[in-house]
Length: 285
Ligand SMILES: O=C(O)CCC(=O)C(=O)O
Ligand SMILES: [Fe+2]
Image (cartoon, rainbow, N blue to C red):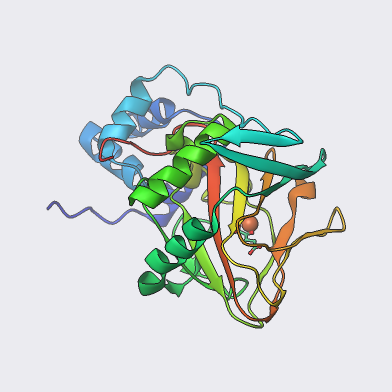
């Protein structure tokens, strides 16, 4: 293992602000070389700050431009036939783009996902402005991430989502499962990453921006626990096997949403976030 040299905070900040301002990785490397950094050192520093392997950096630097971002296909009422299932679209909103879906998952799939998750729970984390996972007081649930295609069940669900939204599986982040107990909630937030945050370049270096979310309910809480969209005055009821899908552009404030406090019983959800570009390699699947 090679240990990485410490990176001066001013240099880190300069790299982040320069890439955030739209300069390519190649241009940043060129500037570093001109300032006197040696080629190997600059690549290693840049890869570390942008949180990507040096090999990905090389591929990035050679690529003339990122491919244009893709968008999900929005499910259409009254229903979509996917994977031998009839998925009902019971509510459609156009701004923000939002769909309530019934029968996305079977009862058996919901129960099996909860069972696979239970031994691996820990306090849910959010991504901080530098791209690191952190415990967040706004989110009091417990949760965990599956890797892409981690189990046969996860793979099946991911494939169903990919077909439903017409988006390759590798544009998805790993499935996140959250567990809320009475009083626990997820306060209002956006799922897209804020370009004003210093870590934006690092968070979006792989996969680009988030473009859509799918929150799947794995059980029906006895009371509370819906997903609220305050800008719409809408609360989607958490119901086993159902889901809320919403798509957004960067800066879309109408997509503000919250997991309301569970009042009685518990709440289990699985969330799939979609990126505009390929987010991960499928080589291990
Ligand atoms: O718990 C909910 O209903 C919403 C979850 C959510 O917003 C998220 O996982 O990003
Ligand atoms: Fe969210």
